[in-house]
Length: 250
Ligand code: PHB
Image 1 (cartoon, helix red, strand yellow):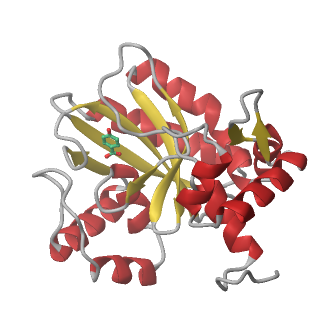
Image 2 (tube, protein in one colour):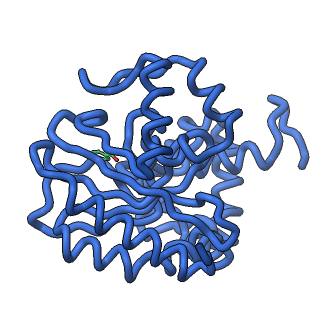
């Protein structure tokens, strides 16, 4: 890709533009996008216009810019995450209807847990997870499952980096995380009481694809004081059924 005068490629500029959109910032002017993406105003306006012409971004009648539905369509239709989500949905719905708390599906993405789906009811308690949002691996039940069953290289890299505490209960000492990962592998699930927010407990199990590899974590978020046993049983049952739907023969 052609480089600009600042040395960044067209692809890098495109990604920076898309990354200025967040769950709480879904509409922006072209000037705001340029400023947040660190681009000269003229380049930002030109690239934004090209992206609008191609349906990657949409411009409304007030000339404000949003992420385009065509981008969503392109990203979704050929994604392996879609196959995973579709296989998981019926069993996530079963967990949600029986446990009656937030039920979610996450994958490992760039050293974090990325959430593909979340089911909740109006009565469900607190939960900071967002669809297409991320949580740190060491501080969430899903993250601990993805880490425990993930590449050894990732575990070592993460354990030698700074593990930020988010609450008083977050495991931030590398040896404590190492012991927790061993526990997750031997029990087959992760329980994270108050690790990411004091008031909730996350519980997660691994989901395997047809090769037996762990490709996702299925989790529920319960109020901190809730008893985890029923949720653990339901999660294991659902993870087994999702694995079978993906072709895993255990
Ligand atoms: C967790 O998976 O540990 C978790 C996620 C979201 C919350 C609480 C816990 O709000």
